[in-house]
Length: 514
Picture (cartoon, rainbow, N blue to C red):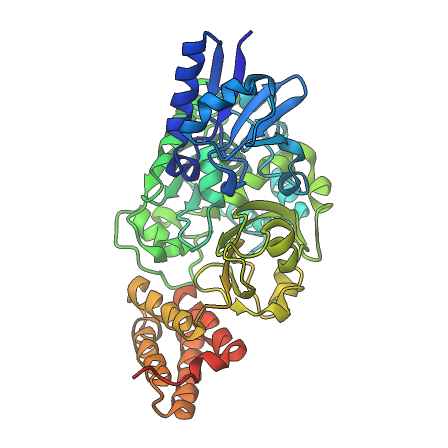
């Protein structure tokens, strides 16, 4: 009997040797005359266990990891094809504590299925949302998404249904759906995991959006640093077209939606939606002034829905199960789930999909296991390089857009970067300003010049030059950047700087090294 073995094709697993592990398993099985089918699935999100190998048994999938090529022979000796005991055995994958306590709605299939198998996708509820949408009027699709409470998962948290409703209400010969897959925040990888591990889900979500607002063409703007994601998406688009779920006359409905992938040019600011549109149209990625809004005058001056990967990927569940089912997760005005990404100095780095309301402390210790160094956690940055630095006293704030903001935090894209007690927060504040210097599109003065001056002022503070006066100057400069910048690049750069000043002031008053 042929045994199915799963080895992740996710970029993180590939970087750790997953291809060599898969090759070793195939070769060893052939040498022993044991029929094996190796499926390259997405990652389960337990990245400290990669390369993770799973074996399909009558009891379920048995996990082994992290597996190196030199471990493969010993695994066969231990009878791992039948779930045999081994030092790397982790038991049933679904029962691993880190995994089983999650609420996996968006990531329900990631790591479970072959990402490039339409049959596998359909067998696990794939295209159920699209089928439901095809039976609904466009306005009904929009209202279902609105009623679910889904908000943009890219960071701004704008209600998705309102954006779709706006585009649907504008008369135009051509409308567009644009996916912002320019995932550039430090410590974030949920978009990449989705595109590599379940690309058909993103395609389905964008197609539903097209049906909802009357758009017949869509673009996925993916950062060039994600070559495996680009390849997966391009293959998945062709597969969906061949199977009739994309392109002309979708499932015989008479509806049309075409989709293509465009690679970004490597600029962080292209994660801002108007700079993304500029880049997508073939120009330099610089921020546009608003109004007009992209929903009315967007790509090629036409009405455009712009959402990020996780927003679109959340839509198939909502259409398949209904708005109420999605509403049952979360708290307050933050409904559903968010894939939180644990990175930095963390023992168990990876992805944790939880309903809004989980606390940082739970994520850091119950899932992350504390720091990899074994030292105390001193600071955590949530929401990318423009997110605030939070001290231990803030770890019990619920991760909900409104409640977390009250604690001074920004949920953003759900990226969480951990620092132990050896971190110098003055250096981290300087890094935030320096990051803005490098990544600013240069269009507005507060961002372009303010960040440059910010680096200089922090250097003077650290050097012990008129610390009180320069600290006051730095705060004034941050206020100008917040109030006068054209987009969030300059407007949010002060977040990490001010939070470092507020919570870790002692790092700015150390005796300078002579």
